[in-house]
Amino acid sequence: MTAPTYDPNLPSLADLRCQIEARHDLPLLRRRDMASAIRTLAGWFNLPEENVPASAKFFREKLARVHAITASVSLRRIQNVRSLVLAAMREVGVSTKLAPYGFPLTDEWNALRQLLEGDTYGQSELSRFMRFCAARGIVPSEVTDITSQEFLTATDAESLIANPKTRHQSMCRVWNKMATKHATAGWPQVRLGVPRYEQRLYRIGADKVSAAVAADIEAYLEHLRGTDIFSGLPKPFRPKSVKAVDGHLWRYVSALHHAGVDLSGAPSFDALLTPELVKRGMRWFLARNDDKPSKHIGEIAWALRCYAVKYRNPSTETATFFAEVLPKLRQQQSGLSEKNITAMAQFDDPLAVERFLLLPQRLWDLALAKSKTVEGGTLRQEAHLLVQSAVAIEILQFAPMRIENLNHLRLDQHFVWQGGQQGGRLRLIIPASEVKNSQALDFLLTEATTARIQRYITQWRCLFLPKSNPHLFPGRAGKAKDQAALRKQIEKTLWDHAALRLTPHQFRHAAAKILLDARPGFYEVVRKLLGHKSMVTTYSHYAGAETQAAVELYGDIITDHRRTGVARGMPRAPNPTRKPTTSRAAGTDLFLEPLSLAGKPGRVKR
Image 1 (cartoon, rainbow, N blue to C red):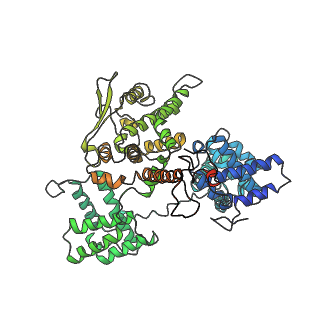
Image 2 (cartoon, rainbow, N blue to C red):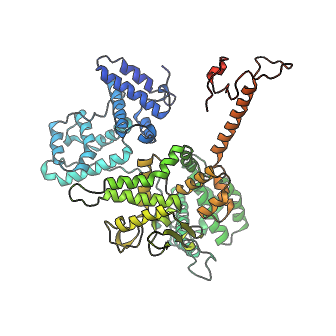
Image 3 (cartoon, one colour):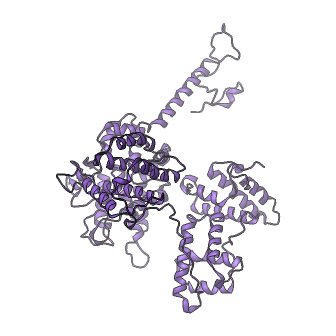
């Protein structure tokens, strides 16, 4: 059997299937189901069975991109395949640590489980751990941090649950909570350590640096804010940009601290910007990134350069140093990032575009189907969130704005009802002062979209919050909904109901791609739609958006030439005196039609 490409030390799915098929001690139907699940899993990964290692960790990473919609199966089928493949791995001994769901608990563990009666969350977080301990003969009073760590190792290696580390943290917290809650009912008084995995957090506090350094950084930030009209910048930075600069400067100071530089006695921030110290700090960042520059490292270096060269009066040595080192650290990237290119590739599939564009109506239909509770006929929060997501997604489709602008849309500031609120059209107007690049946004929505937004406002917007809140997406205390919550809600809805991985900001890229695929070369339209100041920005970002269409066009040209050659008749051997014949029917495709290779007329594939 061919060894897997990814890890030769593990058996492949082909090996696993062969071992299962040879297990005649298992019922025939069970063997067939497992073998079928193994074949199906490899098919979902678009890989031969021989190239897929029998590794739950590998499956977990791949299954994160498998969706019932794109796989043309039900969600239940995906769950069954996952369960059957894991069962097959247990049968052949690949997985040996985690107990199956049906593993019986001992009396001691059953007693604890009864204490969780009615606590759905507590049961879900602790049941797997209880079965793990019961299978290993560990009683509740013998649980330790070592047991907890062994459980994490087994979960990571043998389960398909998402984010094993996060689930392990939750398990430890719930265990400790139950130990407090049921102390008098017999729960073991053992406290588990909740591990922290933020190993890449390194920013230090102001107590680690001298007051002079902190004061210099704050004075620079005030300069960027333009607080003093006489000494500040002619065009002050936006609060978000000031916050970014603040983060970059403190990250650099933190890097010096971790590199062994004593900052408590530094006379000023300027004293920390000598070429030698900058090299020391940058080397610390590079060491964390496999000695390779990154966009993040380049932004930190650029922030240091702006302070040292633009804000201060630098020496010739300092100015020359930054001029030489910045090109090495600051990566200039034109066009979309790898992440955005991957996201846009989803829209090369016409079915994906269709799912994307029809999603708002589908969400409305789902919401209306589950809008009433069985008990009192009241509107359900689940339906409310579906409608809210439908409105947010439809606005982003027709008015691809940034998430900050979407989140802060207000009925009393950004809405203009053209032709009246009844039967008219909604115009969204966002002033330049509220837009990242200071370009005002103006979107006239369609009548159908306007009608749906009106319905949302009157019937759904404030079902669970006061109607006095003026925001389209209201939150608590009269404020807008939490921006991170809205972003996560949109992303989850897109994946759950359309099998698309897309952030709210990537709606802007999707709009450009869909438009350019339909109208190649319409960059000025894209520029106006997205509110870019310059055509250079638009072209540098989306010049490659039509690449797939260009490849398909070139493929059509090659195919047409091949068909023309076949139609003229292709000689069996080189013969310069022989004229082209037309023995084959026009349009017969030698390269696409297998019968043509045998010298037989065949049906042309179109």
